[in-house]
Length: 536
Image (tube, rainbow, N blue to C red; front, top):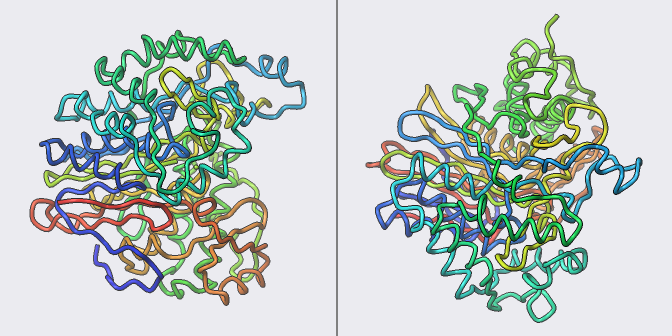
């Protein structure tokens, strides 16, 4: 891709150019990955080491009880990995109705009954076994060191840590693990997580077996039983991540790839398929027409995704039907350029998360995401091993439908890595974290790069909007006031938000600048987080 390397937006970051790159939302995570590259490892080794370190340095967003997804280019072809967790065998609609009453529509937001079997650690092992170069134990070394010795808390992570305290301080194991001195650490204070170091050592020595079939699984079963949950060691022992074929959609001569359902990546593909019917480049990049068009395309995408997407075996329509060009053209015709609309689903049937990316000079590129879902996930932390458990079970429905909870089923998932190719060759690994902001961020940043030629750092720094529901839109305070007013005049209910972390996600980007051995890559890291792109 050809970029304009000027940046019209206020930023503290500049693009990084290197032949070996790691980009994450915390500098120590990026450097953990870089250590593996300097040690002779490849991009997969770097991504795993960075992911393990991120569970320690950004525990608000992810932990050793997270789920994960990955898209990677191995030098010849693209692969996808779904390491999202499955429901415990005890989970049925009746299980939740007995505990929470007939009025409950979803499993609870917090607590042990929001926890599915975590898949991230199994994902690390699967990636290492299939594509890694270094011994798996080596990849855990930086995370173990950081957890044991501690690190000084950075500003953005500290802000979100402190904000979660009141809600979660009474959850099992939370205060013991994350409230040293009875409060959240302050900026610049040392945080140590020795229990997690113990878990990481066991994971390293057993290549994950301790987590899914040994002492960690048994400790989680005991912890769950003591606190009213139903997770068992058998649930852990039966878990396997799944290698999948990424799905894709062409846009402006490139192909965007996403993980197939049970995730929401198809949202970005639908929205781009709709935008492809318009001359987006002919509209001012930050003007009201371009932003209105993108918002309406995203709303149409979500209308279908929220109705149809679930565990693939439960879906009533196929991915191909949802991405059919004729169908998307019919959806595009519903957009009124002068008026915001609240769209319903169509009929396609015929008749707080961390994201990181790594790339090496041999051409391997990794797009990786892992998450506890909401800040600190379930709020429950197994104390012996410091396993901070996600709350992905809250994504199930208790009502009849494609996403209704069932034993061993995976819930609708929000975390999605992205990958861009052209003519079957790799171009960029990237992602934008943040719940339903993720496909919106994928679309907004890609439109900026492909339609307007903005470089990855500028596209990352540009002000974003976030669609919520109905006519409700959040926009960053940096967005042009005339554009905000113009959107409001068209019927969007606009709320200007100053907290970019909470509402607008954060991205990491690595784009090929040419031959990785010669020109290398250009990388970006979002200024909305504490992160960094590093390389050599």
